[in-house]
Every structure is written in C-alpha cells, then in structure tokens.
Image (cartoon, rainbow, N blue to C red; front, side):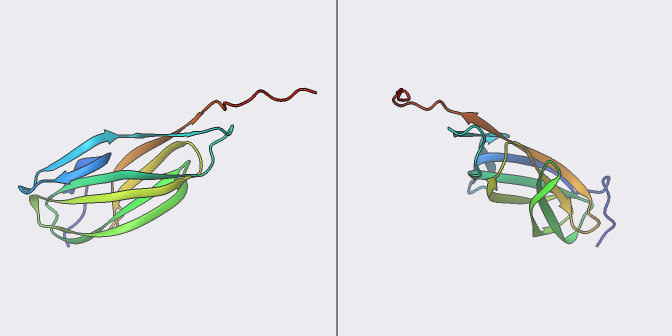
Length: 150
C-alpha cells in the first residue's frame, strides 16, 4: 500500500443522499432527487422514533496516487453520539480510476437534528468528507370532535 495523505488521494467526486441512483448501460451514473433533508410528521408534541428509509447514499472517489485494497468506513452520528458504522472494502487502481459506493440507507431517527455520515479510510483513519442529513419534525394538528364539556 502506498502512503495515504490528503494530497495523494483519494479525492471525493460525489458524496450525497438521493432518492435513487441509476447506472446506465454505458456506466454513466445519474442521481435522482438529491436531498439533505427528511421531514417526519406526527401528532405528538415530540418526535417518536421513526424509521428513515427510501434514501440512497452515493459516494464516488477518484484514486489519485492510491493503488491497492483499502476499506472505507462510514460512521453515523448525531450530537456526537455514535448511531452506527460500517466498513466497505474497495480497490483503488490509481489516477482517474475510481470507486462508486451506492448504498441504501435505513435507520431509526430517535430525535430531530443533523445526522452526520463521516466517510474515512480505515487505514490511517484519513477523513475524506462528512455528509449531513437533517431530520425535521413537523407536528400536525389533530382533527376530531371538540372535547366534551360537563
């Protein structure tokens, strides 16, 4: 493995959430409905734990001077509290060759706020980028008969 450093690569080309990522037959990647916010609705004063799903995380890295097998680590936090992490093996071939990670995302949002998805190399823990996803809670009015009076 070569020495890892910010000036040698890998370089972030894309790091985003979207509704869908389409890879065409010619290898061209299209991202549909890029977003960084998710709305959660409910009738309670505070947000209940809510599944966040139907999102795709897309990370495209270009190798630069990197060659060889590495692991990309994806760590999710909110308010500096660890929510989850995963390691993904990748192969860098050097120069303009890159890797694409297309990952369906699903997690339970226990509170509203900004969830950070940190992308780093496991070897040396070189941080590559951070991707924010804001979960917003919107309280809906309750409709129904007026309260009974005695």
